[in-house]
Length: 285
Ligand SMILES: [Zn+2]
Image (cartoon, rainbow, N blue to C red; front, side):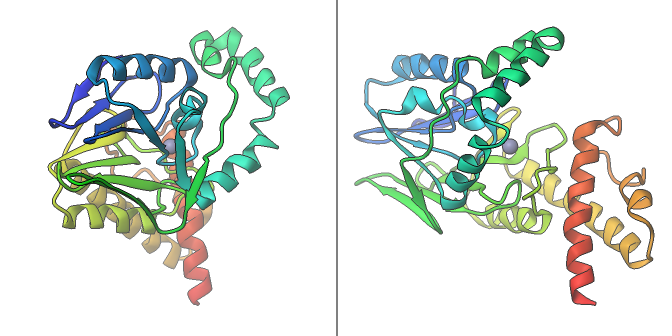
């Protein structure tokens, strides 16, 4: 893992194994965005020390998926910040799919098929945010400001982290740069996703650190907006025509957006977006 310089004060850790992370070096402190999996978080902390001597003060969490929060314990000496619903979701998962027994079972199953993936869950002590917010959370220094804003979209608890002075946006999993996104979370909402991406287009942003994939810019955001709108047009059209769920979610006419096949991520995304739009249309009848 390396920290790639985005601007003078911001860096992105862009790696293939899990979600991306980033840091911003303020005047008196370092802000970390997302902790990835545990082993990567340990590496990230070592990398931060190579880049700056300033002290870490905050870990900001863009959303509750394991590949963004399982390294939290490495930063447990600091304030860990997430949206109120992010903490609630993590608490809920801690009593369902993230119990010790459940994680051990997943590790045992993965060891045979995907040992690298299994190692990501080993020895994890899931660590909750120490501070929650409702609409936004700001860190203000003389010269620098950090604006973390709850936006939803990829998950109900998704937030973006923006550094106005540097014009850098940490978009979390609103953007999987140059790959197909994961929109299959049961709390994913493609309309809120569009709104959040539209807001980014309106802001002065010259670089975007996505939740997955390489550092990008607004062109990728526009690609994502076009994609979601195209899927929406086609899907809502078919819902209105009264086609069946099966016909609509298995339809092959949606734009591929970097994907070559109807893989699982694509399928679960289409299924969730169908659920959302179908519900909205039925409600409005
Ligand atoms: Zn995610």
